Length: 505
Image 1: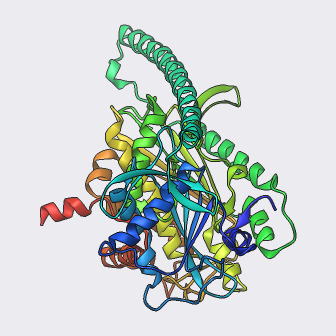
Image 2: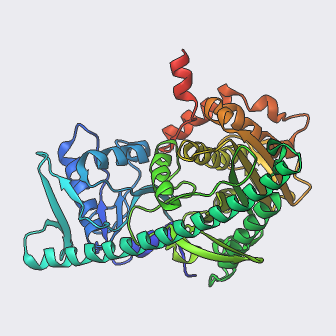
Image 3: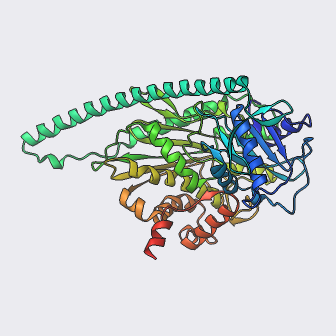
C-alpha cells in the first residue's frame, strides 16, 4: 500500500539494524528536567533531524536497532506528548511542533516515537546542557553534529530559502484569496443594501428584512468535501491485508462535521486572511485538544497545509484553504482526516473512526464506537470554533452540523476498553445519523460544557435505553474524569470553560 502503518514504519526503520540520517534510536532514558544532559541530547537530535529534512526518533531501541523490552524505570507516561513538547519549548529555537506517537510493535511492547517535521524558513537551534545555543545537522555515522563548515551552512541555507520561496507563494495566494473574498463581500453588501433601500421606500422598515441560515449551501459544501475525502481513500493502492481492508472501508465509515459562522442576520461571514487565522488557532489547539493530531491542523513548516484553493461547486466559484490530502500522508496511525475552510466561513472536516483500527488491533468481532472517541471528536470540533470566535468581527451565532456514516449494527463501547466493555448491548439500527445545532456565541464562550453536552447527547441517544441514558451519563464529573485520564495518557486536552470556573470560584 502507499501508506505505511506505524508498525510497518517501525519495521522498515529497524530492518537493517542501524540508524539512518533521518532516524535516531535511543534506549529507554531519563528525559526529565532533572537530567539536563539527557534533555540536551534529545533536543540536539531532534534539531539535527529537522535541519536535515525531518524524520523520527525512537525510544526503547538500542544503537543496533534492537527493540528493547518494556522499561519499569521509564514507563510510557515519562514520554507523553506534554513532556516532549515542554522539553522542546525550553531547548529549541525557533519552536518546533513534533508529533508524539506510541507504536505497539510486533513484540507486544509499545514504543514512543517522535515524528519530526523539517525546519521552516529558519534553521532550528538547540541548547546544550550549559544552555548555549547551537545549530546541528545529521552527518555520516549517523551523528548529530554542530554545523561547522561552509558546505554544511550552504546546504541548510539553500533549503531555508526554498521554504521562504514557498512562504512567499502562500502569501501571494492568500492575498489573492483575500481580494477575491473582499470583492464578493462588497458585491453582496451592495445588493443587500439595494434591496433594503427598495423595501424601505415601499414602506417596509429596513430592520424587518432577515435572512435564514443557508443550510442548502452548507450541506452542499460539506458533501463536496466528503466526496473528495472518499475519492482520496478509493485512490489508495491497497492490498489484501486486514489493515488495508479496514482503510478501504473508511470510504463508507466516517464522520463529516463542521460549523459555519453567522452574523446578526444569520448570514455567512466572509473570512479575512483565513490562513493566518488558522495558523493562530492551530497553535492554541495544541494546548486544548491535541491527541497527537488535532482538527484543522496547520503544519509548522512551509511545505505543509493549509493550501489556498479555488473550487467550482455546482454553479458557484468558491475560494478557501484545504488541509493535508490523504495521499500526502506517509504513515497510517489508525485514522485519516481531510478538511476544507471556505472563504464564506464554512469549516468542514471528514474523519474516519479510530475505533475501527482499535477493533482490528484488539481482535473484537463486532463493530463499535466508544463514548471516549465521540467525546474527542466533538470536543475537538467545538474547541476549534470556540478559539476561532474571538477573532471574527460581527460573529453572533455558530451553526454546527454533524453527519456520521457507517453506524449500522455498531454498539457503544464503554470507557477506555475499545469496545471490550459496553454501555449497552443495543446496536445502531440506522447507517447514517445527521443533526444540527445553532449556538449564540455568548453561550459558546461562557458555558462551554453545556454546548458540548448539547452537541454530544443527540449522537449518544442512538444507544439510549434501559442501561444507558446519555443525558444522565454526560455529567460534568464524568467528563472531567475523562479529561484527566486523557491528560495522563499524554494528550493536551481541557474544556474551555475551566478558566472561567476557576475565576468564579
